[in-house]
Image (tube, rainbow, N blue to C red; front, side):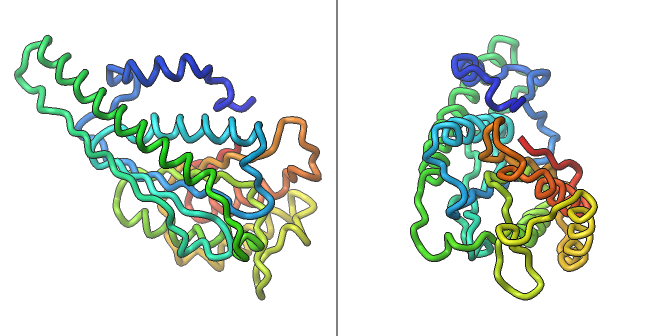
Length: 258
């Protein structure tokens, strides 16, 4: 069951207000690497974010990834659109500016006040960021670029982000139907993989083409637009297997579809 859809909205609001006030609840320590989050939003015809199920699922997913990944000063989040020209489709760049005062040597009361002040500032930032993310999610692409879906173009973008040396998180809001009409490229609308063996073989073949891009070992999460009742023809499990194998061949530490 989709864990994003199991978060009651009221609980999520309480979670935001509390700010997760301890390291046990997920707050970063001062020695942790900054986090670099890449979000890829599918802006092609096959993904309709105006459908109620998709809109609710994607909104909650964006809310959760902000809460999980924008934790301290220096954490970054970038959004790219997936379409015909994915490589040049950066849509948004965000970075946490709030900074917590040094608490070394201060009293417990002052430490709590510093933490509270920081969490309030951070939550204000994340509220602003969420509004910007939702605007990008709902932005329509009525141009000709919505006819093609170049998902593999995200590989160099992930590799470039990996050069920063931060902890990487990557999210795809997409049906992952690669559709590029060019020599040596896949068009899953016309020719999807039809078996697990074929999906795995195609992934290994394509990974060899893209292996010059070192993507590091990011955690990759695919948030699909498919309802739980979707048929296998609509939500092809071999397509999901293809991407799992391809990203793992390129170094991903984890690939999960939700």
